[in-house]
Length: 280
Ligand SMILES: Cc1cc2nc3c(=O)[nH]c(=O)nc-3n(C[C@H](O)[C@H](O)[C@H](O)COP(=O)(O)O)c2cc1C
View 1 (tube, rainbow, N blue to C red):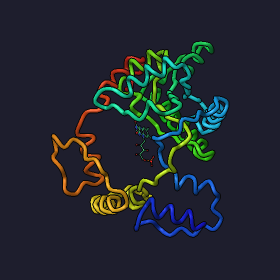
View 2 (view 1 turned 180 degrees about the horizontal axis):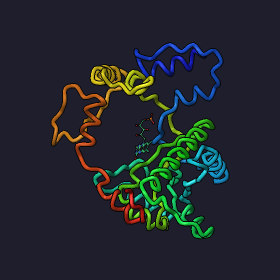
View 3 (view 1 turned 30 degrees about the horizontal axis):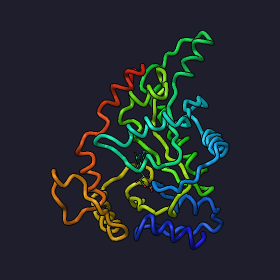
């Protein structure tokens, strides 16, 4: 394994990173290990043809039963982009950085096409249960990951945007999404202003299991992770000090607990049911 890859994995997983001795590491692995979300872009545009090529590569990723229940919407119209910016940059979950991203895409789950096949082929659609929503959502996520890997490999910067679902109804109207088509994530895209930064991940002792799920060491693992991650890159702005006060030690677990102590996207379930999914 190259020294660069070993160093990146050590940075990503910290002291608990196992020693991997694989000799022939492809360069792609360095890209994967060193990647990071990008929220600061130059003003340079990405050619539309390149974005379409990246979408094609995204669709090369696997799809549940070859059902291909995901679509991508490239936002090209300036007025539409402004409307979407307005939603994404306002309200309690506003994210100001998004409006400066040169390009915005929306990855959608699409179960409509499957239902159309049933109509055209005169066959009953008898799988109108949670899977009808779950599989397209997973497929869209896999395509999102494929797109990002392809984009980052050519030096582009990306950041997924779950905030596209903050007001899913309005976004859906703006994008003309019919029944059984729903946004999974937006994606900001452009040429990065800064090189990617490595964000530490939980240790493999927490997230990788052999044969049987085992989280017997999880609390201690996370305390150690909090500590090491804070040393590596402290979180500079504490969330919701008005409610929770200023913590002396503020690590990842405190940040995530504070984040989900506040409701996010409470309406999304209702939106999905409104789109025709039963979710039983
Ligand atoms: C489905 C999904 C939705 C996300 N939504 C947002 C978002 O709305 N805003 C944002 O700034 N980052 C968003 N992110 C990026 C994550 O915050 C980021 O991946 C995480 O902090 C880890 O950092 P890294 O990607 O640099 O390793 C999202 C990531 C995923 C996978």
